[in-house]
Picture 1: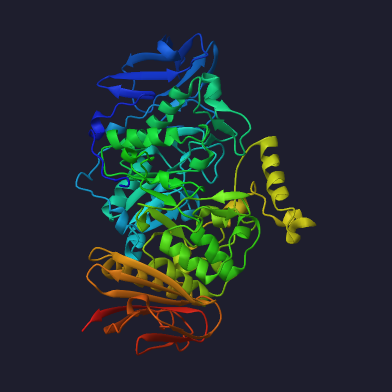
Picture 2: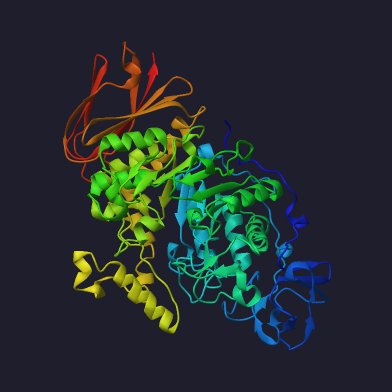
Length: 629
């Protein structure tokens, strides 16, 4: 059985022709709109001039207009009403409720023809939110931080959704103008500059895209195509991929994906909540999108799913009847780790035991639930990950969901002591799975990441009320709902911004050096040559985890992590069972080295015959590599 490959070939960026929106050929602009319920559609410019579009099959309207220029504003009158913004607009400089701006992406001068993104096997992903990543929250300022991320050792930037949304602040999952970068972050060319700067610093860029719903404010899709959305979604209008007009809806979203890849030179897409797609549960749209990207993308492309079903079909190649994606967010590792070190047991954490044995099992397989009963879901969950490689499972200690969906937006390192955070971090970066860091965790940032919105009027009030009702059952908020930060308040957004000056102070600088060191070890030792050939994980006691990776050249990498408390641990490595295995060991990283811990404690380790032992005064971790004499 094979799994999907991420190498694709296609046409050049300049030969890309959209199926929706406005694009230029020579001196002429072409306009194409799907409006099956409309009898007439008129293109209207800011000066009041207009011309009708010609209706074609399936409600597709088209026209051309010579002499227009990038920057001109335009909209559409539908059966005499409007003008409305183009739902495939490339720019909404005045907001999602106003008319659109013509943008020609071919006017941008790229210089990344020789760029090659890292392979998935070598990837270390860094998730960031443009609006809170820097003080100004813009593409321009975010680009100034890219050399720091390159120096840290990450090589893939995953950007939370940037599609234009109502208001001036949002996580991005309320996007409505799906082709247009949010104006509060900058112009389309500012985003292109960000991608170009990332490539110049050796960083690939993956964009989070949302095809399960559109936001609750500013979505004009229903004016053009009433069947584009159905009601009843938790976050806004549900994008409806099913009959009778599902084919055109799917084409619109696939064109959107290709637009981001071609017009912005992105290296991949992360598909938000594919388990929530309104496609009858068949995943047909995901398979169709994957096939289209493989056939028509111009670069090496990474396709990632967020999907809570633990379904191996997502990672199987289409030739084997699978969906054809490259990787999937695998949350089981996070949930087991958080329950173990922080004790969380509410909600979906109830299905996890949080034992070191369960954590070891998760590391060996990529996800924990492989058909077992889940008490939270009330059913059997997951499949055996047969045929998948461990790097196809993207794991984390925190991400935007696992932090931001908490009432106070507190991070894991806000709930445990720094010694335990360092130990958990070494585990994450020692694993063969692909690690994802959430912005700021690499220096144990003090800032939370809270849920924030900027919706107008009654909708904004409803969001605030809904957020507080969500946590009404928690003792801390039952009698004091006002303690839940108001998502509409500017302060809720502002408090979520990173404080980059923390990098210059302890203990944050120590944590940053630990991450930098571990990423260097991962890059130079664990992934070269050939990465781990065999992976074993074991739980010698209730508080300690041991990960063994037999590397391609015969060396053995050994991570010993005490995740809770203090004590001595004795363990027999898997590679040594059944006979002596004489290796010369070199310690490459200890969380109790002074450069990584401002207040180092003694951490002892030794070998007695075939057995190894380590003695911890508090939570900590060792990473060592053994080679034959």
